[in-house]
Figure 1 (cartoon, helix red, strand yellow):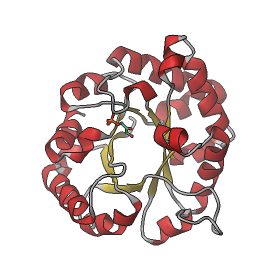
Figure 2 (spheres, protein in one colour):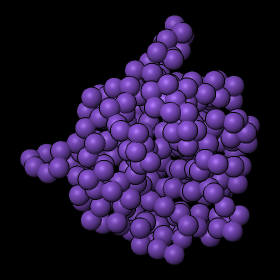
Figure 3 (cartoon, rainbow, N blue to C red):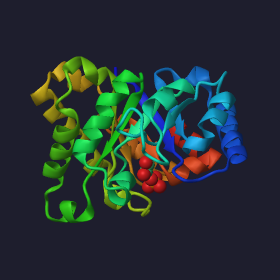
Length: 252
Ligand SMILES: O=C(CO)COP(=O)(O)O
């Protein structure tokens, strides 16, 4: 049985007070007894990580960073290292988000370095990837996703995958209100599981949680999450509202 996960990526939103209020409200409303094998994660911006960690001390809600730098330390003004995240108690990091790829030039090769560093600092990785609209239109979406995974993750040893959560986020569905249909999500997730099984083992592929991200809302979450290879969601806009986010958690 794979772990189900609902993660909220807050992106560059919420002040410290707003972040604490949001995570406390989520903690109050998420019924820990009902969660069973479901993990609930929120990813605030760097400066609010400590405050949100404080607010979640007695909560089932876990806290992720949205990024980290690929070098261990040094002259990288404005950047945050894995060591810094580990030091303040962060245990998860989102890597490879399409906004990092598009606006900050992050490539698969650079992301492979970040992934490698995550082990040193005991950070579980939520690894994001997904095709652009042109790739989908031209029918290249499977090829693009396969190469993203191969280039950034397929150098890992089988045992290293215990640390990896995958998040398929088709770029054309992020923040656009346009969601991949449940069938499109299922088709891609099954493909992802197959290429992992081909490279490693079926057993390993069957154990990896693969989240879907891109305009997940309370109204479409149940249908998307009902697909057999969709193990949860990485939520953007709807994660900023307590009732919407909790409804999506409950949809699982
Ligand atoms: O980018 C996302 C999560 O990382 C998805 O964002 P939206 O849910 O706002 O489309």
